[in-house]
Image 1: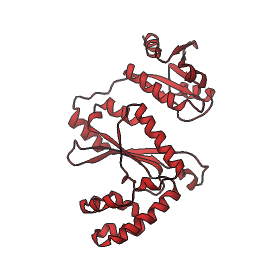
Image 2: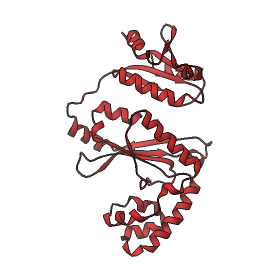
Image 3: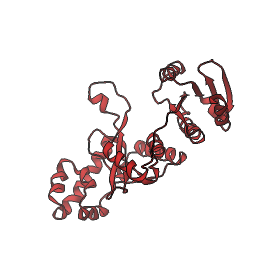
Image 4: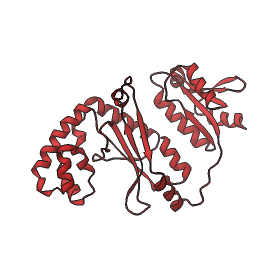
Length: 279
């Protein structure tokens, strides 16, 4: 959602598309690796030298080969999605539902694997064909086990990288009149097991209704006190507060962080209320 919002702000949303996949857990990939290697061994004579080398060292990388003959061969290969464990499949289905609820179009690309071994579950790429041949503008995924591998405590993690030069070229090519504007900050505070999806959807609705407002959502966990401290750190003038009771009732608390006054309004009416507060 964050990157999709950037593309709209840069005026390039119609020129990039989202591809994503789930590569599952370590165990699921190990099972799939065995099936893929068995398939590739049967067709070894049809693989180029690079793919023959990768077939045993890192067989999943064969899936993103740029060789059209190899890609044609892979049409008959086992599908990674058929080897996902139940937890990874449920996680991926949940992500797809979130994207659909946010109105973000995507394509599931079961050959998308990314190049680093520490990825797990979701991997994604934003690609464009507006600069000639298809190129990746932004790519990333989850790597929940990486912090622990580096000696820290187990922690969920997600990240991405952009090709800034390619991004600049794309903006120049399709939106040469682009200018960055200054914006106002609102911080969305959410707490409770069932608030994440509602918070993301509310944030997108507010951003659509108030395109000149920069709304930041809390994704770092923590109680309300810690989240309000983050809102203050970011210099937000207004906080939207969403708890389980607000989600159940279709409401949201709007708090003016300068005066301390707060009001409960319906989620349908929050944009109009914010428009009044912001003048």
